[in-house]
Amino acid sequence: MNIQQPYSRAQTEDNIQKAIIALQLKEFKSIRLAVDHFEVPKSTLADRMSGKKTRAVAHEIEQAFSNAEENTLARWITRLTATGFPATPMLIKEMAEEVCARRV
Image 1 (cartoon, helix red, strand yellow):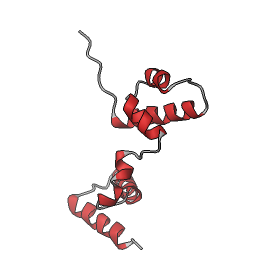
Image 2 (cartoon, rainbow, N blue to C red):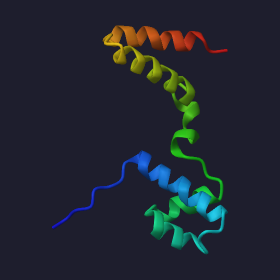
Image 3 (cartoon, one colour):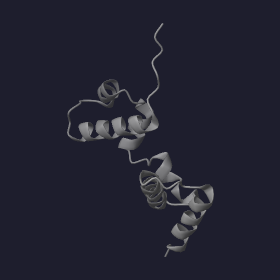
């Protein structure tokens, strides 16, 4: 028995964006046809088409870091590990404090 693995959140979001673009370009006559083609939840696609924000964007003000700040921190950590320098918890904490200090 094959059990279909659920899509990752990033894959689903990517498919939702593709479905929105396809609907805007009138490649599909209905949301249902786009849902079937891109394999995304109908309610989510309908909500997005009506202007509802993603969960991450909607709750950004409740987070300690904005999405841009998180991306900056992730890039720094990625660069460190790519050069063979271990990103210790203490170093990551210092980097996070630096990101906070740069806020306007």
